Image (tube, rainbow, N blue to C red; front, side, top):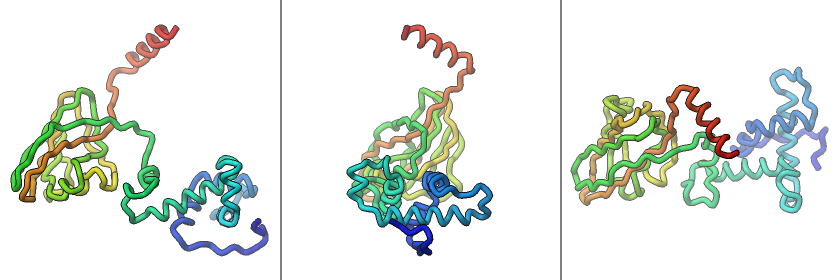
Amino acid sequence: MTDPHQTLPEPLDFAYQVFSTDRRVADYARKRFEVPKDDEDNVFLKKAVLRLWHIAKDASRLACRQKGRVSCPEQAWYDEARILADRVGKRWETTPVPTLVEALKDDEMLYPLAFPRVSIAGGAQTSIITQPYVVFRGRRLVLGSESDCAQLVIHDMKVGKNSQFCNSCALFGGCFSNVAFPFRLKLDTAQVSQCITLVVENMGEKAVSLSATLFGVTLDTRPPIYATLQAAMTRGRLR
């Protein structure tokens, strides 16, 4: 067990940066080591977090497996930080646990909005249009396989008549392959039946079959009274 009076070395690796900035770790360290509320510049809190790191690092992994992760949360957070550090800079789909994806996820439920399947001949350019049945806000675009997307460029992405690009340059299609890093978009809100358009060009010589999908959130634009009535009706049916 780590001596509380020992001067502990602060790791310089990325894993410790992840561990020390985890809110769960800070809250647990504050309670476990009774960090004073008037801790200026978090001096005592930083020492408490550092002590937790060394406790988890020096503890037996067997204890974590036998007693369960809940009984030793600092070990679980230490393991998560190490895993995340090992994943950084690597292709997330080749790792056993896509930790980078989990780290970026939020509480939004994403719904798929499909575009019509098209075949784009080599050197050709086409516009692909879809129309949502509900109010929809795009968050992530997936064009297709990595090999197909490498041949494509996107000249424009529109919601209605408004371009979603920041300049007039085309985007590399590989940014939106099914294995690309799943960064989030923040597109304009598309109303019911409003056109969402992709202007895509095939820069290669062979034809590419494209089945694009836009993942996003749906928005309920009805007045609050409708949601209240629907909830009341649902409760009545359950009875």
